[in-house]
Image (cartoon, rainbow, N blue to C red; front, side, top):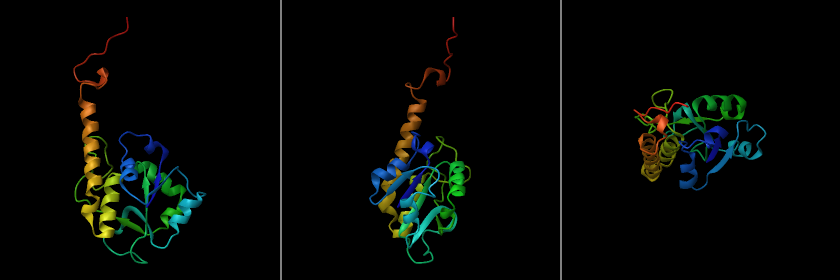
Length: 177
C-alpha cells in the first residue's frame, strides 16, 4: 500500500493514518503535496495492478482491469486538500479507481464533519477496501475498532474536566484587570 499524506493532515491529533502505519505491514508512507517528481511514489503507482482508493471508482469487491489490485494508493488529507493533491499529481488521476461503501456514516461522528454521506476516514476506507480486495473483511476490523476507540477518547477529552476552561460550558472567562 502507498499512502500519500498531506503535511497538515499528519499534524492533526484526530488523523487516522497513524493507525494504518501501526497496524499494517507492507505500507509505504510519504508526506507532501506534489509527488510528480517523487521517484518512489511514481514507481509504485506504475506497478501492474496499482489502483487509487477514491470515490467514484468501481467497488473494491469487483475485479479491476488487469486483475486483483496489487498496490492500493491512498491519499490521506481533508477532502479539500485531497482535491488539490489530485490536481497537482495527474499521475494519480490516471490510475484505475476503486471505492468502498460502508453503508453507514464515518466513525468520526461529532469530531469531524465529512462533506457528504458515505465519506469515511482514511483508516475506515482502507480497512474496507483491503477487506473487499482480499475477501476477508473481518481481518481488518480491529483497525476500525481502534479508530472508533480513539475517536471516543478524543471526544471524552473534549468534553471532560481537563478541557481548557474557556471551552467548558458555563465557565465565564476572567476579564483582564
